[in-house]
Image (tube, rainbow, N blue to C red):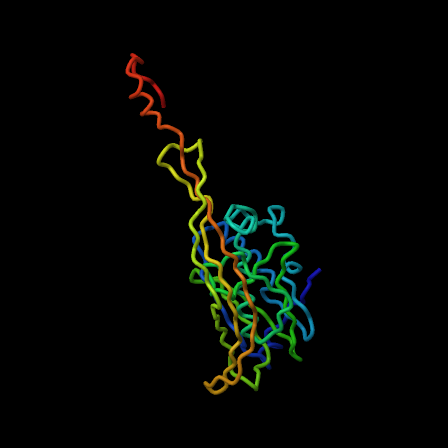
Length: 266
């Protein structure tokens, strides 16, 4: 059954306006974009009533191959990107989160990624991992809100409609970086499967970042207040690089001139 009843345009147009909007750039990974389209569909056209809590995980259900999700890069073990079903879904939840905080709604559950995302400002992401990590917000207003999302111009767009607030005109979200460590050198391991001179970066080193975000409220172009939204901790990551130790085949041939006939190796 439908978790959230659909609404009628006429009903909405009489008293609502667009109270928040946010968009994020898509990549050119077709599987990833397919997943974003699928998971963001779960909040397209929904109504969230006063006091009601929206859960991203509940709305999408399991985001696995059985539910139509394709393999795309996801963060595994907090360090490296690997292709698994549902890669890209965090962009659906993060874009929604960014719109929700600009609509002055109450965030119940939000977690940062293990490292910052490329498509959104540091501290403004919301990672999800079914069924554990969720993004949840409550409609803390006394009127319903409605969510619309569309994909165009290589971006995911999220709009939130509701009753226009009177005490402020808009909310900006700002990020303050509290601390940033150095990016550590990668750990180097010898790999007998790779030839000398070859190297593979298993995963990148990343700096540790602590950030705070604030909702900044404006009325008539002036800031009237700022409220702390969230603290985000992205731990430092020591990357891993594999370096080849296997002698190259041509070096072996040079070393053994007595082999007579030319080798017919592929």
